[in-house]
Image 1: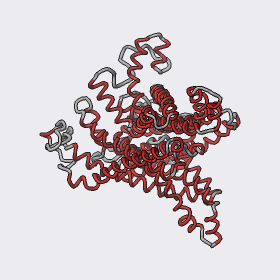
Image 2 (image 1 turned 90 degrees about the vertical axis):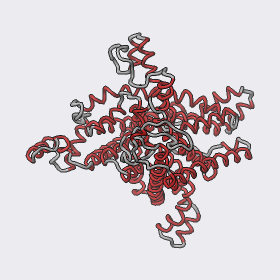
Image 3 (image 1 turned 135 degrees about the vertical axis):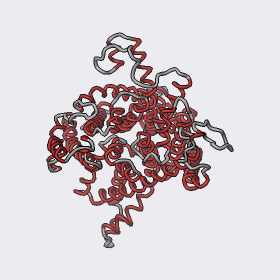
Length: 333
Length: 297
């Protein structure tokens, strides 16, 4: 097991190298001279040449890539143009917000989708199945950012019961410790701040989670349907187990593998979705930072964020692979 | 991944007649919605009451006036007619989605068939490429490409194709691996057919049904992805009306004008719902083995 995971970890290195090459080439494919972009139009050739030398832009492409790679491996993506701070520092202050949001979205999705999927799959063609299937179909067809806008319109605009932007009301939260507002507030026993953070979190997490909810529900349902036809389920029933016991102890546990696979695959979609949802709700996470960086043509920051997100995605998939063995003891690497 | 392509038992456990009828209703509803939107995309602009880009500053922010009125679905912040813009948006959104599906299908099926049929080094290289491109969170690659290459229809299609060929490639490779050993391929080899002939005339025709199913889901995801990119301001140029750009324009007026985000979003939702219904139906009819991969694509 440990061996297998180490092997997989080593296997991600060439992938990450190629990704960095792709990102590097994309930056250089961008139209326009970055020096002119940075220095402004009114510069003379001597200044441009000097700036090029300073940033290493006068070197051949492979030398530039090698330098980029060396500093990237050390976690150094240069200074952000916009924030005039090392890129990694800027990203660090924003990531907890994204993680908090993604975690809650996953919670909403799995806690609703799995029971609903199991329920629907255990009684094919019943009303609960029809309701669940329709719900699943709506979930996968709903663009998360439109749902976000509609939620704002309805719950905040018309009913005015939930906040629609940011992570907290100014002045309620205590000093930052971990950057995770809910965790911080719980540690400080500041229950008003916990509630405040939760109300801010609910709408974005819901908008982000609905898509995954739909997919998970559909996958759970069909996984359950498949296991229901197995011989050992007939045996379980034949020995007189209650239907609830059969479904939750015998069927569900065996249907978990494809569900976990899909959770892993969908995490990537969730990360991408968070970019948009964060923008709609002015959520100060990595996603809205990326859009700000794009609009400001802050290339070091964009590169740093793309590499961070990709690394996170690759690592998540690795962890999911490890989880298989935990869920299904028959799997041995 | 392989565990995802197991055969499902949905229809086995349902009563067959009821299950099939329901399947047809689903596929039929989906087909009607999709065809309706395609017709709107083709003929809509001919009958649209207004020029989608014409600004009428005296008629700004009019609420929907209902059927028969001048601005059926109201006007936006520049006085442009929402109804006409939604219709023109259908054309652009669907055109982009079709282009993406065909180009990525062509690339994915070709590479998948080559990868599966030849194996060895070619297979290794193609699969490494798949692994690298797939390591990007979806949409992020699109955003990155658009950010560095700039807005525009061609770049947008490129950015969307960049990842959408992968599902075709993966599934087709798997199927080609199993087709390669079948008797009719051996027979063709014995008759002296070239590798190119075998792939083009014997392997690829057997992959069309599966590709069709993957294509419908790729279409749904392309529409959402195009809207997302345009919404973020890195998709089509702002002067082209699409559902995504309309939503982007509507964002700052959410609290004052509910009709601005409602209608374009509704169009995206209904179109994608129709495509998913059609895809579900097609998949169950043509290729039940794809049961679980489809929705995730």
